[in-house]
Length: 539
Image (tube, rainbow, N blue to C red; front, side, top):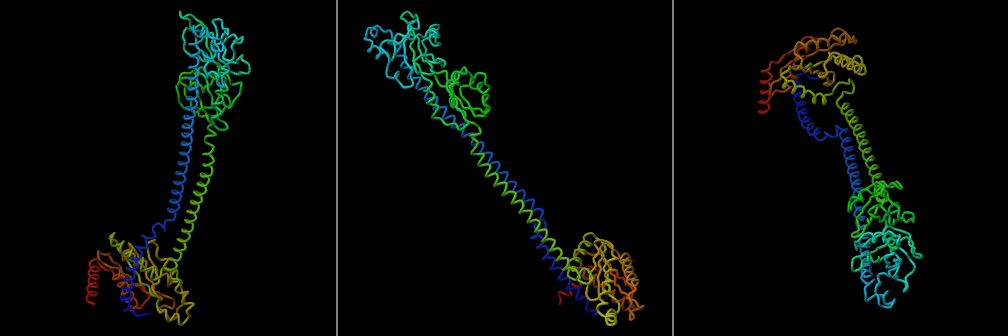
């Protein structure tokens, strides 16, 4: 066994190492806070990925809203174009009607030759390409003036809607008829613009009319694109269809007044709404406006499917990539968590191995120095006793010489097993201090408890019956020094360990295979620490 008197100096150096190690440990603890909590890294990565995915989804949804808003804006512009074109054409033809009314039965005009009279009554506008004809009818409905002939064709309009209206209504305002099949050759579906002609006394003198082929309105709608499943049409305010794109002759004159989608148009001057068409079940975005000075409503209705098709394609690509990258990021985050956990486990195992004596499995000196400082600080803070045991195998050098080092190692392992079996509280600290020396620190344990543990340990080693012919009683035994203190503010564990070491020396001096106890009072620990501090200062 090494000299016992040199032990206090060795203990003081060990505690200095302990203090430096604790400072470095605190800095490392701050730096490794997140690294020691890999689950937090995984959760943070998952939250970030989900947040990015959520933002992408919100952005994509806003793209849908923008696409619908752009469609409505475009439809409003198209409705405006259609309305303006129809209103301008109707205004031009109405001016021609007024000229026909003014010149039809004027005294000076009636005396003119037929060709000249026709040229006066029918201006150039009445010869436009989409007009099926222009006529003046007498009170019996018989054509008396014809745009295309000096002698009026044999046409009678007494049964037509427009003629009956003017005959029964004294108003001279322009009337626009419902669509009908014209009797003029090759005219096709037609609507009529007409005005009443009155005599000087206000009595009914006839009707001036211009026939507008439906092809006029169809040509306007053909310039408007509403997509593959979209629709655009002109309808009367009573629900009678004038013309529709895509074109079908069956639609002309058909009524949609029964359709739920028409109710909004009938009750508002303009607007936009989305509805599913009763005819084909396609959901469309209807934008409409009443055409000024006419009974017509212009409607542009692109299919929602066509409007959102580019957005859906973009969403499919961007959303798919976002989902892929998000899930990949989450996967990588948790893969990193697994790697960190594995690394932490490896580091913990390395730390355990670095702090463990390779032979006995107890703490080594380095790990012991790191832990006893915390135990001392806790006892001082909580005002609890702290005990220390120094254990030394009796005549171990002679044992090694007699039985060999391999058997000596087995004996060290057996003693360490007895130490571990003797201490019971989780906070108890046992370490191999060097060679055949062991140290045990017992938190919250007074001198009586420490003595009981020491005696139990001594008896357990002796009871193991390890042969030692050069020993005290021919079996392997241990001597134990035991010290107890109540740590004071500003005190240090060095004095407690030194006292336990002195007690061990006393046990060996008294014949070995025994326990010697020393209890340090509160004030003695304080004064001893102050004396050591003063001595160090003078040194």
